[in-house]
Each structure stands twice: as structure tokens, then as C-alpha cells.
Length: 155
Image 1 (tube, one colour):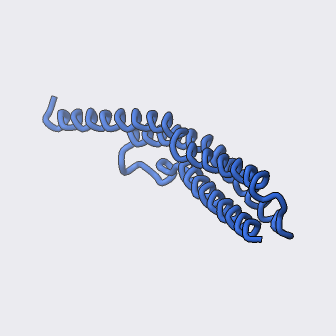
Image 2 (cartoon, helix red, strand yellow; image 1 turned 45 degrees about the horizontal axis):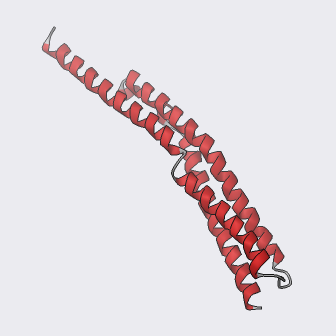
């Protein structure tokens, strides 16, 4: 075996080691993904939705004229936040699977043969957008609920 082929074998071994480590961390991330951010948004949106029901029943026996629409809008945004989070669960799993495919392509192909198409993960981008949408909708729901409460508790 020549010196050059030994270097090549060492490089291939290092590349495989990087590939294997990255693949394992992606598998681990796939399992953990369904637990963190999405879990908290679901908990917060569901809890706030439930709190708003309690608020209506206990604290605000009669509503100020025109404020029921604010409350309904808050409920809709909380529901949409929960829905966006649930959809992001599915896409985050697909994103991890796609990332493993990308890693496999990276391992098999030479660096100069890789294209943007080979390395693009649309599922990850969509998951990221859905998480931001979910958080935005949750914040809008909280703001609407605070407005509804303020109007009705002051009257």
C-alpha cells in the first residue's frame, strides 16, 4: 500500500467516523425532538385555553358589549397554535429522516459533486417556520385574552 493510498484510507475512515457520529446524533435528535419546544407550546396553549374558560365562568359573569369576539379570537389563535405545533411534530420527524439521507449522500459523494439539492432540507425549514407560527399565535392569543380580561374586569 502506497503512502498516498494509506492517507486516503485514513481519510475515508475519518469521514466514516464523522458520518457515523452525525447519523447517531441525528437519530437521537429525532427521538428528542418531539419533547422540547412543541411540548411546551402545547402545554402553554392548552393551559391558557383552559384558564380562559375558568376566567369566563368564575371572574366574568357578564361580558362587556362586543368583547365576546375578542375571546373567540383568542380561542381560535390558541387552537391554531396547538394545530401548528402538532403539524410541526410530523415535519420534524421527516426533517430528521431527510437529514440522514443528506448525510448519506455527503458520505457517498465527493465534496465537489454535492449540489444544493443534495443538501437542502425543506422539512427542517418548514418545521422551523411552523414553530415560529405556533409561538406567534400563542402570543397573539395571550394578548387577546389579556385585552378581553382587562376590558371585562374594569367594567
